[in-house]
Amino acid sequence: MQAWLCRRYGGPEVLALQEVPRPVPRRGEILIRVRATTVSAGDWRVRSLTMPPGLGPIARLALGLRGPRQPILGTELAGVVEAVGAGVTRFRPGDAVVASPGARMGCHAEYRALPEDGPVVAMPGNLSFAEAAAIPFGALTALHFLDRAAIRPGERLLVIGASGAVGTALVQLAHDAGAEVTGVTSTANLALVAALGAARVIDYTVTDVTGEDATHDVIADAVGTKRFAHCAGILAEGGRFLAIAGGLPDMLAALRCTLGGTRRVLVGPAPDRPEALQRVMAMAAAGRLRPVIDSCHGFARMAEAHARVDTGRKRGSVVVTLP
Image (cartoon, rainbow, N blue to C red; front, side, top):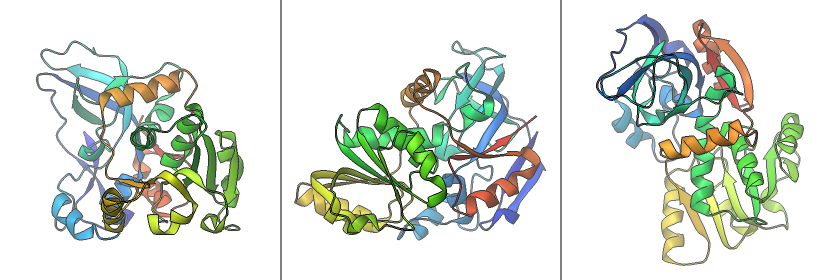
């Protein structure tokens, strides 16, 4: 099969399309023929080794010294079950599925083998493969942090970076939960964020949200541009700061808040849980969660898709489709 490999850290030019052995599903595994995948912020960070403040050396040790140990990137996919291993009961060949291997990656290839009891669910019939692939990364991250924050109806949520994959999911999931959402984004994306459910939208090129008088019960920074120290003045007593792209300073702030004070800092990776994937895809099936696609690229143009993510200006997800 063909797959895009990343053998060293760098820009999109380090990617190479190569022939690699097609996986054979082992007992309890299914083999998925990939029809759509994405280039997520996770792919960008691993390929370029661009990490939150203070985490670069740790990431190099964890991922690989000169290049990723897992050279095939890709955190999410939508496709069709091609074959099943012994003992598989949940899926059969021909089933359309959505999967989110997350940090295990491997989706930038024509085929991906995954455990049937892992983060793999049936694809909703109202979505295309491209639409389905655009949901897991952002929605699972958003759901994880909103669950940790225990967001409640009527609470005021501020989303910084409201037009990316995570941000658009945060706005929709929080609005669905009954929260009053304020989104922070650029001029070009104001209408999009409002249409997704934000009661108020702030243009960061015009207004510095940290200088406003209004306070918020929950502040979610989806892009890593703010720290708890920047936002403490607009976070209500008992409030929660969600450092979704947080680094070492946010981890230290979380420790300090744990030792004293009523505000909390929530930081750390979002796990890919099968039950969470089931929840977000059920919401998408019901029309309560809308996929937002920035652009679609053919499989042969993977580097172009990475370059789009590198601009930092994508809206929602950058999708890559396979024939």
